[in-house]
Length: 118
Image (tube, rainbow, N blue to C red):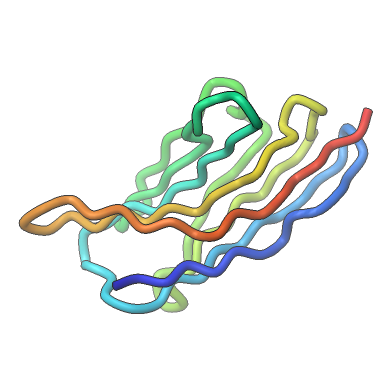
């Protein structure tokens, strides 16, 4: 099992910045990805950014150039630095860890609310 604890959400004005953190503990495989998803009511959860255990990153087009994902493997922690925030970034942000083993297993954090006021 893997436990994920998120922190760093909150209320910010448009144009502002926030940093989300997600600390993982438990059975973390050497080959994994850590990802941030977000979800607004009535819509599907969408991938915002991901980073592999080898630090390869990918981003949704809507956040490229504004968000940066990074990880500290020694601390099993992933970060999402969000800048130039827009009201449409308002959502519940979820941390995800995907373990790649004999089978692929996903773990999820409890979610943290990010609200961007206009």
